[in-house]
Image (tube, rainbow, N blue to C red):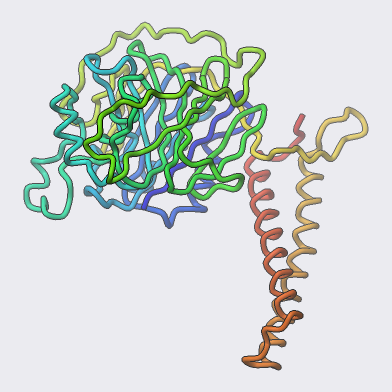
Length: 405
């Protein structure tokens, strides 16, 4: 099991990093043995991988304002906790692909060994190969990460090289697409069956394995254009057992527009003047490096080209407590209003818990009457309101005090 998180913004007012760290703490039970992120910051794409929580959170703290963060945390299943196989996974092949990609994913690919043989025959090089390290545990782990197999299949599908994704399994994934001059092009997200919830508005999007919001539709590949903020989607399916070996004859459907920004959200990207370097075989600098900095002994951060920062307001509607003088939103007054509401709901929850306990004690095994079931339903609804209020208050505390426009 793994956890995936993505936060995107369209104005540099709120902090993707704080939202990602908050969500990670909400779902850290999904994995604390292997970490990584990829981010767009100040015309650069930055990625980092680490084997422990302390190192990756330190790297997150250094980010500052960002357009995008894709964050991954894992319980190693198909391979060991190693920097080279921790996410994000880089996929590129000028022979086979028009673009290069970063991918993070939750789930497991069941036919990854066969896919690797097929991909290498096509000319792909597996950058996560750890066969030299796994010689003693080959019966337990794969010698590469199944995410690379999925990433190559998704890249081929996105680039139009195939109309069928041959990977087989249960997955959810986030993908950053770039051209070979290191310009970020689009953000893709998809789930076959593993959980992803999301919310979006005019200013951005947020999604995660256990986020609040709506459930992401299954078997739809979504594409967010990072230049004009257009969101589109198309049908996409992983292979099933009975499809193995079938010919690739079904054409892809066209992209279906979901939302379109009337005005471009970003200025045109500006190329960096630093030349592209060859990959470093010593560690995980397989991406075209501009600069590299170590994360202790366990990994590094590679900076390439990116886009300007964005902005995300995480709720579908903005609650406002207006200042009569200038019409702005008083942050402190609104948080106080939420805290008062939370206090009242917590008292209701405490009362209901007492009533339910008393009812069970009084009536024993015959307690499940209509009156009892009504109390339980009210208790669950109140508990949900309490949880939602706590999350919203915690979020506003990350904004700091002052006034929100």
